[in-house]
Image 1 (cartoon, one colour):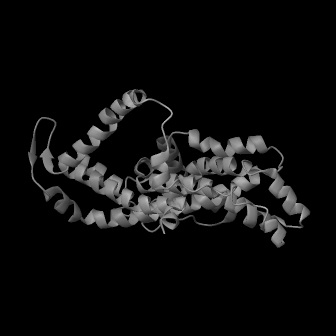
Image 2 (tube, helix red, strand yellow):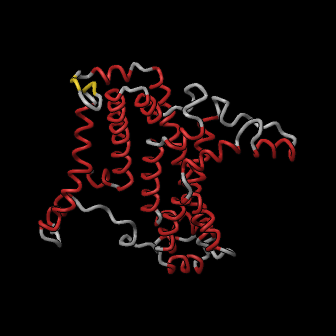
Image 3 (tube, helix red, strand yellow):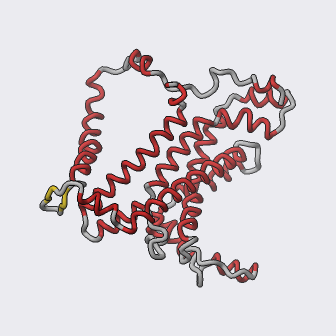
Length: 312
């Protein structure tokens, strides 16, 4: 691709940066203040108050009828739990592996499904269908399919290819990654949908001009599709990373954190403590999970939105 094609993308078409602080202060609302009161009341009752209540109860030993303030004891006890170290490591592995896989596969599928392929609408529906299925249902189904002795997948490997299949969910070294693969299969449809929306929003004139300029498919993807899909990519990264770091239902449906603690994540550790009746300890775990997810997502969000560069 020549420099003429590279210059086809003017600065005003590239993803816009967020307005600066001074500019935000100059922005005026298009609605009167009273218009926001119902939404503010709902936010206060259903989001702000439960959040602050959780922070308070994390410092207590509580039941449904009474509570006692015990300071930092819940947090100290939580960090002394031997499952926590495994849970933290597994949470980060699960979150980053599923997020990276959804970004790569979602972008590849979006490029394919925005090209003139036969049955494009049907293929889009097939890719998106797993998103509509219950997470628990998906977990139980794949748990049966991946059974090392009676599962369909190992049966096909043995009868068709003559290969003895591994213990997908019973091998401590494979269980977490197996669940992560199922998570990617179920969630890549959302990533693909977001990428498709980003790609179809790119003006077709850029692609036509690039082809006239002699650009090949790889050059068009690298110079036009990829940079102009950056907002969609940021959205996919943020949503999939948050979902991965707080994932629980699929993991618990398929392995319940096992074998042993090999596929336990922070959320499943917290759930087990709730089951055991340690409500204050579990609430402290939720606060820790909230702080961890926030500490990761704020810099990631600022990096993806280019705020760090803007402030420099």
